[in-house]
Amino acid sequence: MAPTANTSNPAPTPAAPGAPVIVVTGPTASGKSGLALELAEDLGGVVINADSMQVYRELAILTARPGLAAMRQVTHRLYGVLPGAERCSAGRWRVMALAEIAAAQAEGKVPIVTGGTGLYLRALARGLEPVPEVPEAVRAQARQLHRRLGGAGFHAALTARDPVMAARLHPNDSQRLLRAWEVLEASGRSLAAWHADGDGADSPGAAPYRYLWLLRQPARAALYAACDARFLAMIKAGALEEVRALNTLGLDPSLPIMKALGVRELSAHLAGTATLEDAVAGAQQATRNYAKRQATWLRTQLPSAERGSAMQIEQLSESLSSDIFSKIRQFLLTG
Image (cartoon, rainbow, N blue to C red; front, side, top):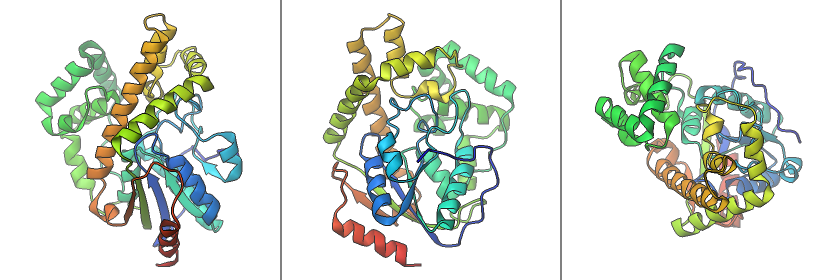
């Protein structure tokens, strides 16, 4: 079935209080998509994307978007629904996700949200922080400063002004570094303070659902091997040609899609400044680093209420045991 969604940011349909939502999350390459597909087939569900890169249509291969076979097996939503020229914030995704969750429930289907973008999942479960709008002039100045200082220099500048937020962010995470800087500039307050104001299950905008979190946390060695193998498979499937086509669009380098894992490294090869071997090795390393950060975030940053309604799955296999399926069915039946 085609991945469709209303992307015009409509007001979400009111949710049924206490309705169940299953969330399959974990670091990249941990097998989330396969598990979500298995659950949707068994339970009669709809798979709803919570990956910040899989919402963009231009990078199906490089973002490991579910293939056509999976799309035909069960209904998938919010995959490839936005052009790379647009920016999808946690707030924008949340509006679309709530609408898809409500639509699935109206059809008598189980909403199965899957992805590893922690800020999206937090926004869904806990509501949005009351962060003020950032003027475009402030955004432009921040981007200019980042280009001048580079990732490490910009991170150091943020550390001097906002050590709390800087400690949470990697120097290569330009999107979130820029966000932290912009909010500080526009509001005079750290983004961490705005987060603290909005944290809590009763915060404005928190969706009235019951969540069951399936956390994929495979052993690190197995996860890293899966990251490396998957990127090689992406290259064989045409990821290089995909990045070549992306670069012909002339998009703003600050756009989220241009930060997708592998874009920078493969673009360097296409520009003649790196061998394919070096580009692949660099992208594999970046993917492993990202997987490590995701695993840490999911272990430490999901609110305690969500962790209390979770099952951790350590094996890398994409199959769930009968015991886990039994617990999932029990969750769906209990109000």
